Length: 268
Image (cartoon, rainbow, N blue to C red; front, side, top):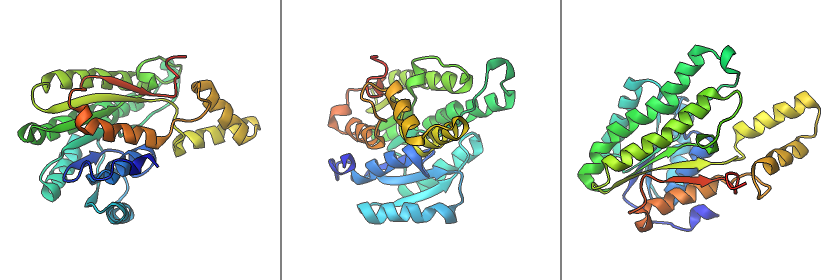
């Protein structure tokens, strides 16, 4: 597995991955753990439910890990999350701004409350986490910030006004942070996954199959083929391995850059 190829390269570093109680966020966290980073997992579930997950990662990879519940759309909760991480580990060396919500619907019928929620979680949450983690990074003269954007940070799409807007803005934020921190030892980049076979995507396809009466496997295969010249979903571990690479020596001079990991979707 890709997550086992760089074991130990991040030993002594601590990574905070927002929205990491499952799916892509958890896969990225596990890749960082496999490389030796201590972990702060985050989500909306309670500590009792998810701390065992953090403990399992700690045991599997010989690291320390905690789970901190926090709604990153709320500034006070982001502040509490980062303070808790500092109490346990001293500071955050690697920040992955991954937490996301999305809603579907045409602009004229789009619920303004859904818009506000997406802005607060997807965009403002990344802003607050970045500004709160940055002082430790600059003092340490080393840090990595990743904004998880999307293919839709490059391209528009119907009925996704909140998602397209926030994912596009995360690219601009990464560029702005990169310029501000260019001489500090801190880098900031935007990662743009294509169609990843996460539970959320597969559940959506399952719903489409139930509605249309089509076979789930056939629909999932066609869904992936329409979005990737490789004909398959992007692997979560491919994205996690890219983070580990960018945290290594080769990533020291890579900042303010946008990385599509999309199986050639943009090229097509």
